[in-house]
Length: 393
Image 1 (cartoon, rainbow, N blue to C red):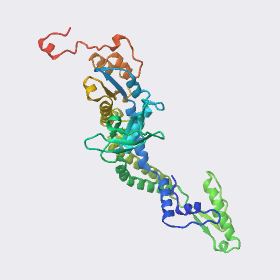
Image 2 (image 1 turned 135 degrees about the vertical axis):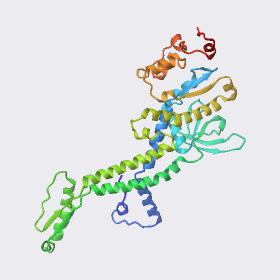
Image 3 (image 1 turned 30 degrees about the horizontal axis):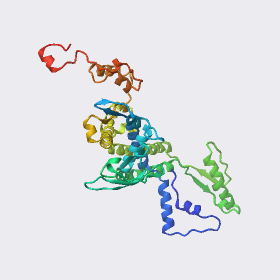
Image 4 (image 1 turned 90 degrees about the vertical axis):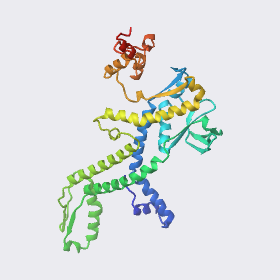
Protein backbone atom coordinates (compact mmCIF):
# COMPACT_ATOMS: atom_id res chain seq x y z
CA UNK A 1 0.00 0.00 0.00
CA UNK A 2 1.40 3.39 -1.02
CA UNK A 3 2.14 5.78 1.83
CA UNK A 4 0.93 9.37 1.74
CA UNK A 5 3.69 11.95 1.45
CA UNK A 6 3.24 15.13 3.45
CA UNK A 7 3.60 17.30 0.33
CA UNK A 8 0.93 15.27 -1.46
CA UNK A 9 -1.42 15.63 1.47
CA UNK A 10 -0.89 19.40 1.53
CA UNK A 11 -1.62 19.63 -2.21
CA UNK A 12 -4.82 17.63 -1.72
CA UNK A 13 -5.98 20.22 0.80
CA UNK A 14 -5.33 23.14 -1.55
CA UNK A 15 -7.97 23.91 -4.17
CA UNK A 16 -8.07 27.14 -6.13
CA UNK A 17 -6.88 30.04 -4.01
CA UNK A 18 -7.50 28.26 -0.68
CA UNK A 19 -4.80 27.92 1.93
CA UNK A 20 -4.13 25.55 4.80
CA UNK A 21 -2.81 26.43 8.23
CA UNK A 22 -0.15 24.10 9.61
CA UNK A 23 -0.99 23.50 13.28
CA UNK A 24 -1.46 20.60 15.68
CA UNK A 25 -4.90 19.75 14.27
CA UNK A 26 -3.83 19.55 10.63
CA UNK A 27 -0.71 17.59 11.58
CA UNK A 28 -2.85 15.15 13.60
CA UNK A 29 -5.12 14.71 10.59
CA UNK A 30 -2.11 13.92 8.39
CA UNK A 31 -0.76 11.40 10.90
CA UNK A 32 -4.13 9.65 11.02
CA UNK A 33 -4.23 9.41 7.23
CA UNK A 34 -0.64 8.21 7.21
CA UNK A 35 -1.37 5.44 9.73
CA UNK A 36 -4.41 4.33 7.70
CA UNK A 37 -2.27 4.05 4.56
CA UNK A 38 0.34 1.82 6.24
CA UNK A 39 0.31 -1.91 5.66
CA UNK A 40 -1.14 -3.27 8.92
CA UNK A 41 0.47 -6.66 9.32
CA UNK A 42 -0.90 -7.09 12.85
CA UNK A 43 -4.53 -6.73 11.79
CA UNK A 44 -4.10 -9.12 8.87
CA UNK A 45 -2.47 -11.82 11.01
CA UNK A 46 -5.06 -11.39 13.79
CA UNK A 47 -8.04 -11.56 11.44
CA UNK A 48 -6.64 -14.65 9.71
CA UNK A 49 -6.02 -16.46 13.00
CA UNK A 50 -9.29 -15.48 14.68
CA UNK A 51 -11.31 -16.39 11.60
CA UNK A 52 -9.70 -19.85 11.56
CA UNK A 53 -10.56 -20.48 15.22
CA UNK A 54 -14.10 -19.12 14.90
CA UNK A 55 -15.03 -21.09 11.80
CA UNK A 56 -13.43 -24.28 13.13
CA UNK A 57 -15.42 -24.16 16.36
CA UNK A 58 -18.58 -23.27 14.41
CA UNK A 59 -18.32 -26.66 12.66
CA UNK A 60 -18.80 -28.44 16.00
CA UNK A 61 -22.11 -30.12 16.82
CA UNK A 62 -23.99 -28.82 19.85
CA UNK A 63 -25.42 -32.06 21.25
CA UNK A 64 -28.40 -31.63 23.58
CA UNK A 65 -28.66 -34.34 26.22
CA UNK A 66 -31.89 -35.28 28.05
CA UNK A 67 -31.92 -37.90 30.80
CA UNK A 68 -28.34 -38.86 29.82
CA UNK A 69 -29.42 -39.58 26.21
CA UNK A 70 -28.98 -37.53 23.06
CA UNK A 71 -32.19 -35.63 22.38
CA UNK A 72 -33.18 -33.50 19.38
CA UNK A 73 -35.62 -30.72 20.19
CA UNK A 74 -35.97 -26.95 19.96
CA UNK A 75 -32.72 -26.31 21.84
CA UNK A 76 -30.83 -28.52 19.41
CA UNK A 77 -32.30 -26.68 16.42
CA UNK A 78 -31.50 -23.34 18.02
CA UNK A 79 -27.78 -24.08 18.49
CA UNK A 80 -27.20 -26.10 15.32
CA UNK A 81 -29.30 -24.45 12.64
CA UNK A 82 -31.07 -21.15 13.32
CA UNK A 83 -30.25 -19.23 16.51
CA UNK A 84 -32.18 -16.25 15.14
CA UNK A 85 -34.06 -15.08 12.06
CA UNK A 86 -31.01 -13.56 10.40
CA UNK A 87 -28.10 -15.96 10.93
CA UNK A 88 -27.19 -19.58 10.46
CA UNK A 89 -25.37 -21.48 13.19
CA UNK A 90 -22.02 -21.03 11.39
CA UNK A 91 -22.45 -17.25 11.12
CA UNK A 92 -23.68 -16.96 14.70
CA UNK A 93 -20.92 -18.96 16.39
CA UNK A 94 -18.22 -17.43 14.17
CA UNK A 95 -19.40 -13.94 15.16
CA UNK A 96 -19.44 -14.84 18.87
CA UNK A 97 -15.97 -16.39 18.89
CA UNK A 98 -14.53 -13.54 16.80
CA UNK A 99 -15.85 -10.97 19.27
CA UNK A 100 -14.68 -13.09 22.20
CA UNK A 101 -11.07 -13.24 21.02
CA UNK A 102 -10.79 -9.84 19.37
CA UNK A 103 -12.56 -7.88 22.14
CA UNK A 104 -11.55 -10.23 24.97
CA UNK A 105 -15.22 -10.78 25.89
CA UNK A 106 -18.54 -11.64 24.21
CA UNK A 107 -22.20 -11.81 25.17
CA UNK A 108 -25.17 -13.82 23.89
CA UNK A 109 -28.65 -12.78 25.03
CA UNK A 110 -32.15 -14.05 24.31
CA UNK A 111 -34.92 -11.81 23.03
CA UNK A 112 -38.54 -11.94 24.22
CA UNK A 113 -39.49 -14.14 21.24
CA UNK A 114 -36.74 -16.70 21.92
CA UNK A 115 -34.05 -15.60 19.47
CA UNK A 116 -30.35 -15.72 20.39
CA UNK A 117 -28.29 -12.67 19.41
CA UNK A 118 -24.62 -11.80 19.79
CA UNK A 119 -24.26 -8.37 21.41
CA UNK A 120 -22.33 -5.73 19.50
CA UNK A 121 -21.86 -3.63 22.64
CA UNK A 122 -22.94 -3.61 26.27
CA UNK A 123 -22.14 -2.18 29.70
CA UNK A 124 -21.25 -4.48 32.59
CA UNK A 125 -21.48 -3.81 36.32
CA UNK A 126 -19.60 -6.36 38.43
CA UNK A 127 -20.56 -7.45 41.94
CA UNK A 128 -18.74 -9.66 44.41
CA UNK A 129 -21.69 -11.82 45.58
CA UNK A 130 -24.69 -10.85 43.47
CA UNK A 131 -25.10 -11.48 39.73
CA UNK A 132 -23.29 -9.08 37.42
CA UNK A 133 -25.66 -6.79 35.53
CA UNK A 134 -25.57 -6.04 31.79
CA UNK A 135 -27.28 -2.95 30.38
CA UNK A 136 -27.35 -1.06 27.08
CA UNK A 137 -27.11 -4.37 25.21
CA UNK A 138 -27.05 -3.61 21.48
CA UNK A 139 -27.25 -5.95 18.47
CA UNK A 140 -27.96 -5.28 14.79
CA UNK A 141 -28.55 -1.55 15.37
CA UNK A 142 -31.14 -2.32 18.09
CA UNK A 143 -30.71 -1.62 21.79
CA UNK A 144 -32.62 -3.72 24.29
CA UNK A 145 -34.39 -1.80 27.03
CA UNK A 146 -34.09 -4.82 29.31
CA UNK A 147 -31.35 -5.03 31.94
CA UNK A 148 -29.94 -8.54 32.07
CA UNK A 149 -28.42 -10.37 35.02
CA UNK A 150 -25.49 -12.75 34.51
CA UNK A 151 -27.79 -15.78 34.88
CA UNK A 152 -29.85 -14.60 31.88
CA UNK A 153 -27.02 -14.33 29.36
CA UNK A 154 -24.15 -16.37 27.92
CA UNK A 155 -21.04 -14.37 28.78
CA UNK A 156 -17.43 -15.43 28.28
CA UNK A 157 -14.16 -13.66 28.87
CA UNK A 158 -11.21 -14.90 26.84
CA UNK A 159 -8.26 -13.83 28.98
CA UNK A 160 -7.29 -11.55 31.80
CA UNK A 161 -5.25 -9.52 29.35
CA UNK A 162 -5.96 -7.98 25.96
CA UNK A 163 -4.40 -10.21 23.34
CA UNK A 164 -4.87 -7.64 20.61
CA UNK A 165 -2.93 -4.86 22.36
CA UNK A 166 -0.09 -7.16 23.38
CA UNK A 167 0.27 -8.57 19.88
CA UNK A 168 0.08 -5.08 18.43
CA UNK A 169 3.12 -4.08 20.43
CA UNK A 170 4.98 -7.22 19.45
CA UNK A 171 4.15 -6.87 15.76
CA UNK A 172 4.94 -3.17 15.60
CA UNK A 173 8.56 -4.00 14.94
CA UNK A 174 7.50 -6.39 12.14
CA UNK A 175 5.50 -3.61 10.51
CA UNK A 176 8.50 -1.28 10.64
CA UNK A 177 10.70 -3.93 9.07
CA UNK A 178 8.01 -4.66 6.46
CA UNK A 179 7.83 -0.99 5.51
CA UNK A 180 11.63 -0.86 5.17
CA UNK A 181 11.60 -4.01 3.01
CA UNK A 182 8.91 -2.53 0.77
CA UNK A 183 10.92 0.67 0.36
CA UNK A 184 14.03 -1.33 -0.56
CA UNK A 185 12.01 -3.38 -3.04
CA UNK A 186 10.49 -0.29 -4.68
CA UNK A 187 13.94 1.26 -4.82
CA UNK A 188 15.48 -1.84 -6.39
CA UNK A 189 12.94 -2.07 -9.22
CA UNK A 190 13.08 1.64 -10.03
CA UNK A 191 14.94 3.10 -13.00
CA UNK A 192 18.20 4.89 -12.26
CA UNK A 193 20.30 6.52 -14.90
CA UNK A 194 22.87 9.19 -15.72
CA UNK A 195 22.09 11.93 -18.20
CA UNK A 196 25.11 13.74 -19.61
CA UNK A 197 24.45 17.10 -21.26
CA UNK A 198 27.16 18.88 -23.20
CA UNK A 199 28.09 22.42 -22.24
CA UNK A 200 27.12 23.67 -25.69
CA UNK A 201 23.63 22.24 -25.43
CA UNK A 202 23.18 23.47 -21.85
CA UNK A 203 23.88 27.03 -23.04
CA UNK A 204 21.49 26.90 -26.00
CA UNK A 205 18.53 29.30 -26.04
CA UNK A 206 15.79 26.63 -25.99
CA UNK A 207 17.58 24.34 -23.51
CA UNK A 208 15.14 24.76 -20.65
CA UNK A 209 12.14 23.96 -22.82
CA UNK A 210 13.76 20.88 -24.34
CA UNK A 211 15.06 19.74 -20.94
CA UNK A 212 11.63 20.02 -19.30
CA UNK A 213 9.99 18.11 -22.14
CA UNK A 214 12.60 15.36 -21.89
CA UNK A 215 12.35 14.97 -18.12
CA UNK A 216 8.60 15.39 -17.66
CA UNK A 217 7.22 13.74 -20.78
CA UNK A 218 9.59 11.64 -22.85
CA UNK A 219 11.43 9.91 -20.01
CA UNK A 220 8.13 9.32 -18.24
CA UNK A 221 6.62 7.53 -21.24
CA UNK A 222 9.86 5.66 -21.84
CA UNK A 223 9.95 4.23 -18.31
CA UNK A 224 6.24 3.34 -18.37
CA UNK A 225 6.41 1.40 -21.65
CA UNK A 226 7.28 -2.29 -21.76
CA UNK A 227 9.20 -1.88 -25.01
CA UNK A 228 10.34 1.58 -26.10
CA UNK A 229 12.99 3.60 -27.91
CA UNK A 230 14.10 6.97 -26.60
CA UNK A 231 15.49 9.32 -29.29
CA UNK A 232 17.97 11.87 -27.94
CA UNK A 233 19.22 15.03 -29.61
CA UNK A 234 22.90 15.76 -30.07
CA UNK A 235 24.44 16.84 -26.79
CA UNK A 236 22.41 14.39 -24.68
CA UNK A 237 23.74 11.01 -23.55
CA UNK A 238 21.70 8.74 -21.24
CA UNK A 239 23.06 5.54 -19.65
CA UNK A 240 22.01 3.16 -16.86
CA UNK A 241 24.66 1.79 -14.50
CA UNK A 242 24.97 -1.99 -14.63
CA UNK A 243 23.59 -3.58 -11.44
CA UNK A 244 22.51 -7.03 -10.37
CA UNK A 245 18.94 -5.78 -10.16
CA UNK A 246 17.17 -9.10 -10.66
CA UNK A 247 19.05 -10.73 -7.81
CA UNK A 248 18.41 -7.75 -5.55
CA UNK A 249 14.68 -7.76 -6.36
CA UNK A 250 14.34 -11.46 -5.49
CA UNK A 251 16.19 -10.85 -2.24
CA UNK A 252 13.79 -8.06 -1.26
CA UNK A 253 10.76 -10.21 -2.09
CA UNK A 254 12.15 -13.03 0.05
CA UNK A 255 12.68 -10.58 2.92
CA UNK A 256 9.03 -9.47 2.72
CA UNK A 257 7.78 -13.09 2.68
CA UNK A 258 10.01 -14.03 5.62
CA UNK A 259 8.81 -11.07 7.67
CA UNK A 260 5.17 -11.93 6.96
CA UNK A 261 5.74 -15.56 7.93
CA UNK A 262 7.50 -14.58 11.15
CA UNK A 263 4.63 -12.27 12.11
CA UNK A 264 2.06 -14.96 11.36
CA UNK A 265 4.08 -17.49 13.36
CA UNK A 266 4.19 -15.17 16.39
CA UNK A 267 0.42 -14.59 16.28
CA UNK A 268 -0.29 -18.31 15.80
CA UNK A 269 1.86 -19.23 18.80
CA UNK A 270 -0.03 -16.69 20.93
CA UNK A 271 -3.27 -18.55 20.16
CA UNK A 272 -1.72 -22.04 20.57
CA UNK A 273 -2.03 -22.80 16.85
CA UNK A 274 0.73 -24.70 15.03
CA UNK A 275 2.22 -22.17 12.56
CA UNK A 276 2.09 -24.77 9.77
CA UNK A 277 -1.72 -24.35 9.63
CA UNK A 278 -1.64 -20.56 9.31
CA UNK A 279 1.21 -20.66 6.79
CA UNK A 280 -0.46 -23.41 4.75
CA UNK A 281 2.47 -25.83 4.97
CA UNK A 282 1.41 -29.31 3.85
CA UNK A 283 4.06 -31.29 5.73
CA UNK A 284 2.78 -32.86 8.96
CA UNK A 285 -0.51 -31.01 8.52
CA UNK A 286 -2.56 -33.84 10.04
CA UNK A 287 -0.60 -33.75 13.31
CA UNK A 288 -0.78 -29.96 13.31
CA UNK A 289 -4.58 -30.03 12.97
CA UNK A 290 -4.85 -32.47 15.90
CA UNK A 291 -2.72 -30.15 18.04
CA UNK A 292 -4.79 -27.16 16.95
CA UNK A 293 -8.07 -28.85 17.92
CA UNK A 294 -6.69 -30.05 21.26
CA UNK A 295 -4.97 -26.85 22.40
CA UNK A 296 -7.24 -24.21 20.90
CA UNK A 297 -10.68 -25.47 19.83
CA UNK A 298 -11.39 -27.93 22.65
CA UNK A 299 -10.59 -25.34 25.31
CA UNK A 300 -13.01 -22.79 23.85
CA UNK A 301 -15.64 -25.49 23.27
CA UNK A 302 -15.44 -26.62 26.89
CA UNK A 303 -15.75 -23.05 28.19
CA UNK A 304 -18.80 -22.37 26.00
CA UNK A 305 -20.30 -25.77 26.84
CA UNK A 306 -20.02 -25.12 30.57
CA UNK A 307 -21.46 -21.60 30.26
CA UNK A 308 -24.48 -22.76 28.22
CA UNK A 309 -25.19 -25.65 30.57
CA UNK A 310 -24.87 -23.42 33.65
CA UNK A 311 -27.11 -20.66 32.30
CA UNK A 312 -29.73 -22.53 30.24
CA UNK A 313 -30.01 -25.72 32.31
CA UNK A 314 -28.69 -25.09 35.81
CA UNK A 315 -27.56 -27.44 38.57
CA UNK A 316 -30.88 -29.24 39.11
CA UNK A 317 -31.35 -30.09 35.44
CA UNK A 318 -27.70 -31.08 35.04
CA UNK A 319 -27.95 -33.59 37.89
CA UNK A 320 -30.96 -35.10 36.12
CA UNK A 321 -28.79 -35.68 33.06
CA UNK A 322 -29.91 -32.64 31.06
CA UNK A 323 -27.11 -30.56 29.56
CA UNK A 324 -25.40 -29.54 26.32
CA UNK A 325 -22.26 -31.14 24.89
CA UNK A 326 -20.14 -29.56 22.16
CA UNK A 327 -18.69 -32.31 19.97
CA UNK A 328 -15.51 -31.07 18.24
CA UNK A 329 -14.86 -34.39 16.49
CA UNK A 330 -16.40 -33.05 13.28
CA UNK A 331 -13.98 -30.09 13.16
CA UNK A 332 -11.51 -32.36 11.39
CA UNK A 333 -12.79 -33.72 8.08
CA UNK A 334 -13.45 -37.47 8.21
CA UNK A 335 -13.72 -39.33 4.91
CA UNK A 336 -15.62 -42.63 5.02
CA UNK A 337 -13.36 -44.28 2.44
CA UNK A 338 -9.91 -43.27 3.64
CA UNK A 339 -10.91 -43.68 7.31
CA UNK A 340 -12.69 -47.02 6.83
CA UNK A 341 -10.22 -49.02 8.95
CA UNK A 342 -10.38 -46.57 11.85
CA UNK A 343 -14.17 -46.42 11.70
CA UNK A 344 -14.35 -50.22 11.64
CA UNK A 345 -12.17 -50.40 14.75
CA UNK A 346 -14.30 -47.77 16.52
CA UNK A 347 -17.52 -49.68 15.77
CA UNK A 348 -16.02 -53.07 16.66
CA UNK A 349 -14.82 -51.77 20.04
CA UNK A 350 -18.14 -50.16 20.92
CA UNK A 351 -16.85 -46.58 20.75
CA UNK A 352 -19.23 -45.66 17.90
CA UNK A 353 -22.36 -47.16 16.42
CA UNK A 354 -22.96 -47.11 12.62
CA UNK A 355 -25.35 -44.16 13.03
CA UNK A 356 -22.70 -42.03 14.74
CA UNK A 357 -19.97 -43.11 12.32
CA UNK A 358 -22.08 -42.00 9.34
CA UNK A 359 -22.87 -38.71 11.07
CA UNK A 360 -19.18 -37.97 11.66
CA UNK A 361 -18.53 -38.56 7.93
CA UNK A 362 -21.19 -35.95 7.07
CA UNK A 363 -23.41 -38.64 5.59
CA UNK A 364 -27.15 -39.09 6.03
CA UNK A 365 -27.32 -41.48 9.02
CA UNK A 366 -29.33 -44.66 8.79
CA UNK A 367 -32.41 -44.45 11.03
CA UNK A 368 -32.82 -48.24 11.37
CA UNK A 369 -32.72 -49.66 14.90
CA UNK A 370 -29.67 -51.80 14.18
CA UNK A 371 -27.67 -48.73 13.07
CA UNK A 372 -28.18 -47.11 16.47
CA UNK A 373 -27.11 -50.22 18.36
CA UNK A 374 -23.58 -50.66 19.71
CA UNK A 375 -21.44 -53.64 18.74
CA UNK A 376 -18.38 -55.26 20.26
CA UNK A 377 -16.35 -58.15 18.90
CA UNK A 378 -15.29 -61.05 21.09
CA UNK A 379 -11.75 -59.67 21.10
CA UNK A 380 -13.01 -57.18 23.67
CA UNK A 381 -14.09 -58.63 26.99
CA UNK A 382 -14.00 -57.66 30.64
CA UNK A 383 -10.95 -58.34 32.80
CA UNK A 384 -13.11 -60.59 35.00
CA UNK A 385 -13.87 -62.95 32.12
CA UNK A 386 -10.21 -62.95 31.05
CA UNK A 387 -9.09 -64.02 34.55
CA UNK A 388 -11.67 -66.83 34.61
CA UNK A 389 -10.33 -68.04 31.27
CA UNK A 390 -13.76 -67.90 29.68
CA UNK A 391 -15.25 -66.03 26.83
CA UNK A 392 -17.99 -63.43 26.86
CA UNK A 393 -20.93 -65.02 25.08
